[in-house]
Amino acid sequence: MESIRIQLENEVSDYSLNSNNYSLTFILSVKHFGGQNQISIHLSGFDKDKNEEVDWFNKLIESNQKIILEVVKGGDSVQPKENKLMEESFIDKQKMETYLFLQRELKAKGLL
Image (cartoon, rainbow, N blue to C red; front, side, top):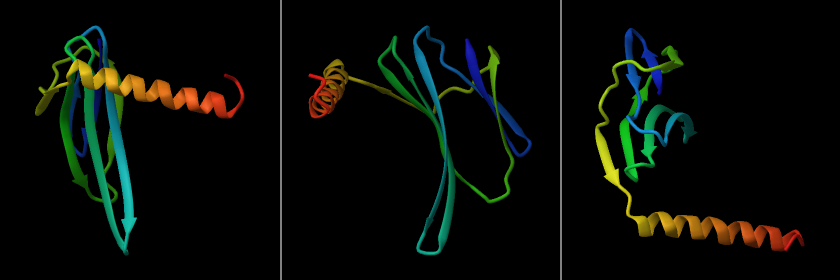
């Protein structure tokens, strides 16, 4: 199983899900609005076996902070801070919305 290893300054942590069907997502966001900067990092995932969304962190960071990301095998993983069970009906609704969107796109291009 792959983990995401994140080193932020001198702190190193591994993040993974104990699942056969999962996704891990790391987002670095740099925003500049009204003359102000905001830099944040976010790590989350989805455990398809449990239909569960998980969040590890969403934190602000400073300019010039060094972040190192690695994909590694195994390792001791930090437990998620939040787990949220996704209802099957919600997942089915998302799939149907995606299907209908793609269908409209194909019709607009004359492919259906």
